[in-house]
Length: 292
Image (tube, rainbow, N blue to C red; front, side, top):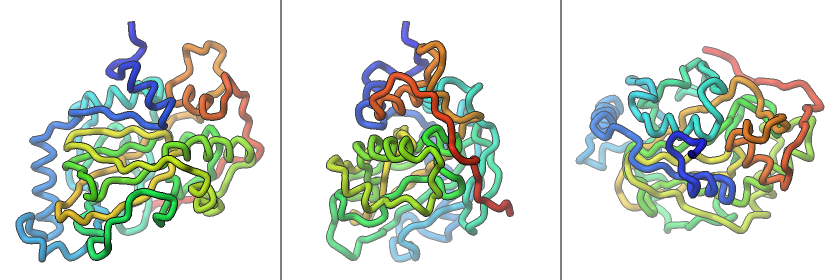
């Protein structure tokens, strides 16, 4: 019997080999369509009139929200499969809103806090994913990063609309997970979020992909995945979100029973070439955020 609720062996292996997995048909598309229609109204844009799309990309605050287990039960089960169960998931987390402040949200809820790419970079020729693309980064601007950090446990991409080729899909570098894992392993004192040299890190990578998919798809990535925004040159707005996934406790990379390792913990050890690791931070854990 599989140890997972919805993931199959191929998906689990993809997370170990490539640092991400894909789960299809996760969202209630009727709700997604309604929330997107309301998003246009909130922005004062017309879906049929591109001349009203004043900003090329928009980070929206939420109006609607629902428990993930109701809105996207398959996605919820997949996330729990990766982190090892809902008893390891932190309920309340911090999120940076459009005003530049952090606010408290419930991680058991998903909302219409969309990132909408209307036409970012449409005035320039399409640039495929490569180390030369600008903006490569690892998420987590509000905490000191350790190998086992809990604050950014997963990097999810929820596709509320189709994410088409050259249509604003996130660029990822699958082999960057190994690079970042090794770097954090070599820095047990932790790394300030502003001290990462992402340009140097991405220069050591050779695997680059453009994330595409259909409305309702969920991509679950390892938190060490370097990624970057891309251009939308096809004239179709792309609606996505990155709901935060935070653990109650840091990853345990030295569990007594190997069967108790989550897929996330197994993957982290896999990218280091280890079976277990008694990781101990050499400096205090720190958070850098101010509530509204």
